[in-house]
Length: 341
Image 1 (cartoon, rainbow, N blue to C red):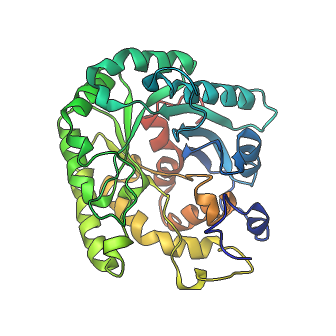
Image 2: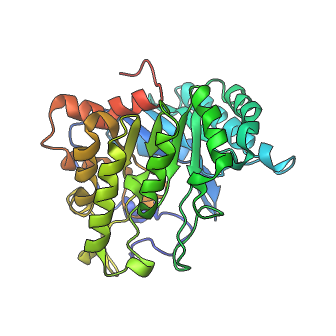
């Protein structure tokens, strides 16, 4: 079976060919970043998530990450993302029934609003809070942009983090006590730091270890990227109101090229990720670092069981208090999750 790089979604049958003994099965985990969707013929909703949550790790709660899922088909453009918030509330209600396991899945969420609306986002934010049944914790801005055409831009414009309209919207987010998730590329870390400095007290979560670009114009220059990325991570970490998520890294290893009978195990995955995650933990400290599954995106490379085993291998030498933060405590504080730890 080939590694899943061209299909519409993850290959569940391939992933099921490898099962591992779960490491530290009692360690409480809050998964602070996963999606739910029906996309390109692949379904990942509460039943599929519940199957992954039941793979042996002690997942006590999860945070739903916005992903343009279930937007309203009709109505003004700025209101369509309310459909996703309504959808998440329904999925959380399914989880709360207990029919899908003991995890408080989709216990809280962060959503999407067009931050170029400026101060006009306030009534929209209030509607999201109400539509979520109180689960709405903040907003994510997907700001990844690079001038090279070989890079997939997730933002519609360059330097959106410096846009005055976005700053007006973030001032509202901060005043309302909500958080800001940010997905960017490593070349934008200094822009992110500027944004944080402009909004004292804003709780912000840097997604995906700052997404180092390893392809396009940077292909073959991993050492150069690593040096630039690591310096940027250290600068951002100096802001004590910023958290970092550890995950969402492709598994790049020589043995992964071409066909494989079995998917990679947690030792391989940990070896591939360690160099990107340990510097983040060193810079931010365990108290502001959190492991994330990023499922079902990450499921294209490894299973949920293997993913969390890999994280546990990376932090095998950490103290009990550090593990408590890395796997649950930091997420609980950043997203104001109560009653699970």
